Length: 280
Image (cartoon, rainbow, N blue to C red; front, side, top):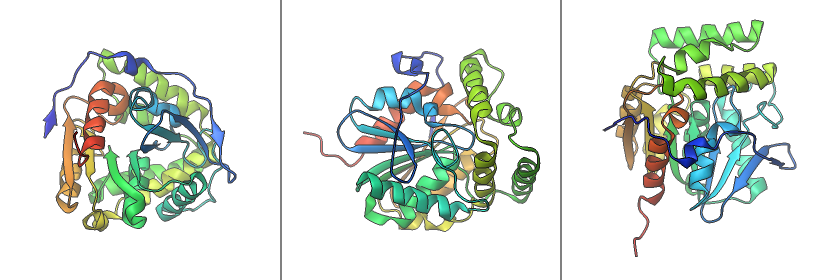
């Protein structure tokens, strides 16, 4: 299913800037806003919880939104060098424990999507719903070789600050603000934390790939029609495996669709959050 792109942005789309953070005893940084059923947001490699700014602003009107800094990003402690995707999923499970959270909704973007999918497969009833934004699924050999080469280069040379901007954004004027925000966040990230996460991202596309059949709750697979790496075909393939899988493709957008098409993404996430709820 494709959703038309839009250049009209509401007030929530302008919710950019820094967010205050709290931290758990183990050193996980997070920002919390709103009340109601919990929604946890996990960003991608090189980003920080501010990447969810438009979603925090809008969805906190109806939910207790908890945006978390991934290990080695923002204010969160990094994981050991060589940590695979499973270690990031275990990290997220510990965060849920520290926050006393059960039956949560989880939305992840890119690497955060891999973590959210792994959590949904691993933690059963603790994950009520999962949204998989611009996430990968079983890369083809060419894409796999390219991402592994990037991971090796990052381990040797540090943060790739320009390559993601080329892959993640088009040349349209509407992407300009999101592109510059992303550039800023890439310049702030801890190089070692970035390398550790990127290595797990590069090697994790198949880790939980066949577990979608075990995810009982509503599973939303959302990406941009022009995302060259987290493709619409991947979203369709995963949704076909999940018992309650659904696909939403945002036409004319690439990887950072939650920033370049925030009103559309907010609407689709609100739809996903309401799926299966009684209407009275």
